[in-house]
Image 1 (cartoon, helix red, strand yellow):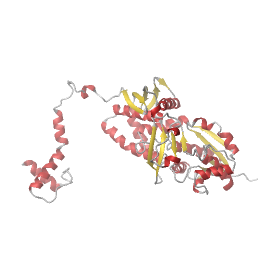
Image 2 (image 1 turned 30 degrees about the horizontal axis):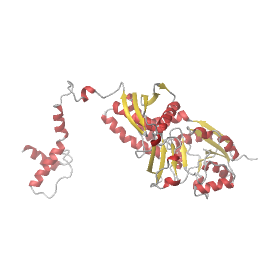
Image 3 (image 1 turned 30 degrees about the vertical axis):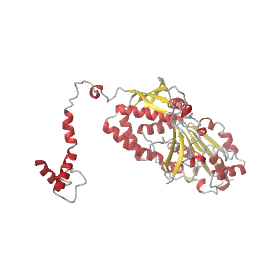
Image 4 (image 1 turned 90 degrees about the vertical axis):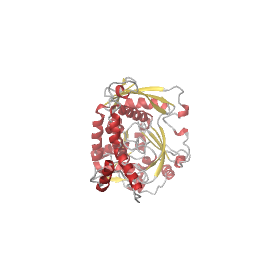
Length: 433
């Protein structure tokens, strides 16, 4: 008897991947091997093995990827300061490449001919999974059932599950699309599809609503070494323990709930609610420390690359030379990002309560409004004269053009003789008067 070809399915036990096992067996005749990567979704993995086998999988891998997820994906993105469209801390985005990487490794180990995922044809995750597979195993076949089958909605997916006796964790009345890991929980669908609808506080699974948070603020101190958090409130913790501690602390204070309409990579806008309590705290703390430790031009340029880094992560181009090159730049900037940050958490807000570092570039001697002996305020006059010279020259040029009744006035300042030789000559002539 010829053995069946194998496919490895990225499996969560949710609605989509639960029915995909049966669908793959019916439509491809494959031996389905399920792979669940534990990136901190907690108790959701507890009953997966029994469920996967009952629905037709021949084997289930449950891989503990939590510390790797934090150190190799979350921390690099946080150090870069990458935030998509000013709000989204990329919780689902950087979880996909680590899952795809492990899925490919298992597929090679098992001799599988294909990998499969449950991402819809409208979402970003299909791109993130498949770009990772293409980068790591270009020979591997990719199956995306949502782009092939007759099912067109989550309601129809529930009907398919009921028809085949497949237990699923949702109903048509409670049908939010959610993705959870140790960094965040996302909510999409149902009433959230109308941006005019205010999110129902009952959808929150991690954070308390800000209005119900304690009336007394909570203070938290985070110690960083070269941009990496290593201690919280004086305790040295593992990466997982540290993020878990901050998640619990932030959640009880209503910190980290974001409601946004974002631009998906596939072209449409989508509305989602994200719960990212620990991540919100870490991003704020890291930014406060960088303000103290980075010089102006490095800090400003880092803000520029943060936007591009966020786009790369959001678009699923994790395994790319550009992302690796940006990491090299970021890591260089983090050599002096060492110190302690104190934050105040209060009813959904995170505010700075203190920051210190042995590499601080802040000097009270220079910055004070009191008497000092290190800064000659008269020096500012020459700096302002030089810095403002292009504005002065242009204003003089405009004034002389008006006196001469010229019909046109230069729209840009005179910068160099090579760029604007005639205007430069005219300006020099005016300055000699």
